[in-house]
Image (cartoon, rainbow, N blue to C red; front, side, top):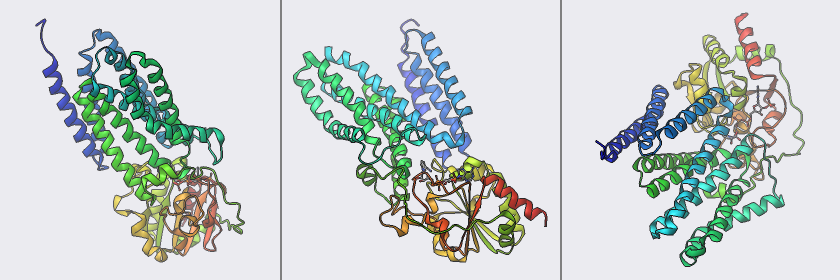
Length: 461
Ligand code: TAP
């Protein structure tokens, strides 16, 4: 028993974990099975981590690490607000990158004593992807949480961007330099580490407001690719499989998100400074406020209504009253649809999740391509805390930072109600001409209060 080899058992457990990951991911594709899928994937991860812990000399260290990680993860996921999930995802991606960066770094010392070319290449590539993911994700976190704002012309930002371009050639240069000067590798190696970390900052710094969703999913993909490389380095099958799954699914999501913004990934990453806080100073005219009583009178006479939720609905947690309003409109004889933009809110599927939580039927949800051609037939479009995703500048103003992004063209409906608290801009920081259109009425106030007032009007019938 003393010489018992755990490797085979470990590999069987790894295979089982991989199967659980794949089954879990498949189940995440449907709202009805998503919760179970999440649980199944988490079970796979617990199995994989436990099987790996068998190798650790002191099992106490492994148990403490698993418990500590589990408790911190559980506390964060219970405490974090739905609206802050993208920031949390950015941090998770960053920590994934940091873990692989440290794994590869720790392998470097072993390699110097036992030179193996393939291992060297793996160490340098893993450090590069892991490091860029780590520092890039921290910047993404700062941008999403409003702590970092960058304008075109910021000298410091431009220095970081130059370092990013420098870091692109740092991988081959470091490999060549290390192969020549292996005896005195420290200086070259530590310079490489610094360029990678600073380059990661320069990678995300110039990317503008509306493009952040694409960057987050790309960083998510990078964290998976880095993990897969770390798996090759450690010859750990489950790390290779899990890393490849995250890498591939993150890449697919990145391409879908970029398509939703009508951009290419290259354009988003390398055009730069799509401006996170630019704002048109053009005088757009006057806005026409409306109160709940008058809005109700128009809605009561409407036979088709489009509800377009955005980030503000998530902030106000208005999804339940929105569903109630939808049902009251239907009872009143109107046909009701929900227009869902792929980047509405702050994470992929944000509006779908909130509306599903409020039991809005999935059959009522429509995408921009489906609803835009028939927009003219809607008597009223109710925009609930959405801004960028209904901004006509995206189709009408070639100079706008969001020009080219597909929108839900609510301005073509007969009447538009915009529910928000003020005239402030959305995530991309650009003025919205929709608010000044002839057929638009602004219902100012917290979205939940405004919708509740409309619901009360219907109930007083
Ligand atoms: P935004 O353009 O960000 O606009 C949200 C609006 O909600 C704001 O103008 C705000 O105006 C209003 N609001 C906030 N709290 C409210 C409340 N309690 N009651 C009523 N209104 C409230 O949202 P959007 O149209 O959903 O567009 C999403 C934006 O985020 C896009 O630019 C997208 O690229 C970006 N983004 C998306 C994601 C993903 S993956 N979905 C991730 C990161 C970034 P007031 O302050 O005046 O109320």
